Image (cartoon, rainbow, N blue to C red):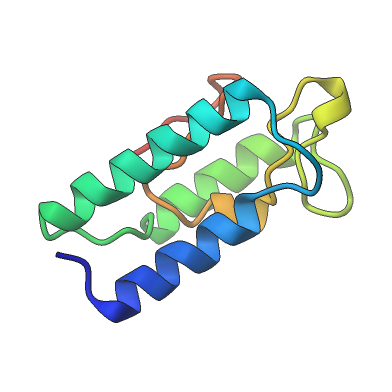
Length: 104
């Protein structure tokens, strides 16, 4: 069972990941996969947050990606996920749908 604090943290991260506008079916499916992975981590007593070295590695990959916009979002118009990457990198169950990095 998730604690109130874990629910607030997960909700805040997922809200930050959510984009403006109507998400695609793939975006909804990807978000559902992250939610399921987060729920599994909580059920196993694991943190929902990625370790600092994983966050740094994700940033290193994304910072070289031409889809990363100055706003911190991944460019949906060019096939990106449209997520707000500073939040997405912190969630252990998140992943790059372009398969540049995986969940931990």
